[in-house]
Length: 448
Image (cartoon, rainbow, N blue to C red; front, side, top):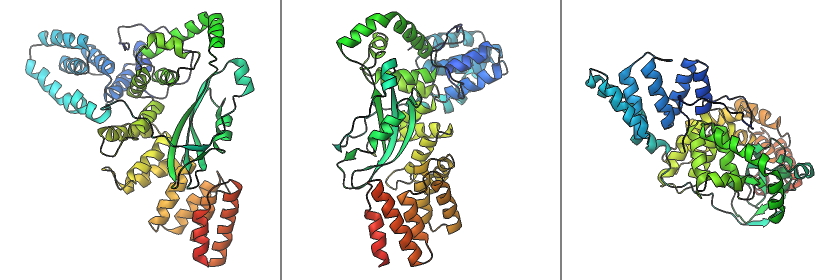
């Protein structure tokens, strides 16, 4: 995939428009062309930390000309050499030209070796590049399935899209505590997924936490598709071309969207996109490209896929590193998942204090499952009741009758009658949601 460099003039109208709040190759190049050199340099430097070869190439160009940074041929040489390590043949050739134009080769070598400690292929690939194609989350058997209803208005307009949901499964197999990570178009299909998931049941005997699901809403209908595509091919082709151009020019969000479309062959757009990306693993390659272009949702999706591998697999640590990147972007779902990961005693990165810190950051963003997990950990650590009640109150502002919150309040109650009353209220709420009452029943039994 050839992403753009500074010598390319950008002239593209994106179909998907939004304010860019992170550094990707496209926005950084726009900043450069607007002569916001310092901003562009900082953005390219962020991308270089993710192993983005074109960003390294651009840092070399800016160092060579003193744009956004003090002019320095040794630094330019070092960045060109690093870009070459990541597969840029042009960069390797340019590095040699810069070397020949400078009278102190030792300064060149010293600078290259200094930057190599942080940006070399060996360093970054071990941290961020998957050893193998990301694994799928192990499948679970569903005992009850209600298909999400395709909204009538969306079907009439020919709208397609997806919803990325996360949820827990209780010990009776019921889906609980659903949260939406992403949806496209925004909120069009969300209600359909929420309504369907509440009726799903899985064949499990122990709780499953933080299950991830991306459900695709597509209107693909075989011959009907061929007929509609024939009528709309010109318009589709124009929009698809714009998306392809945006992806090639390093727009992380568009790369992420295309990876989602390529993940299913039943989108109206999928067949046309696959004329350009013919590789069966193109969706995974584009997801990694979007992650390297600093798009938080891509980083999080890549992380969750990689972390589904066995504990000893090298991809697990790579996933943990991408999870950090997404969490640093203030993505609450990633912060929650990162907090959970640090609480796993079987993992090499087990660090409960870090786990609590990240849970708090997600909880402060009103992430309910983060709040529930945080409260559980604070109770386990014998934290002051005032602090625990503060978090319980925050969580109840999102779900006042949540069974688990009521159970936690019962466990903290100072006298038995109050504890039993709260526990009975928790059980009533759980039954109304068709959730398991095993934990609540055990607590009530302990009071008698």
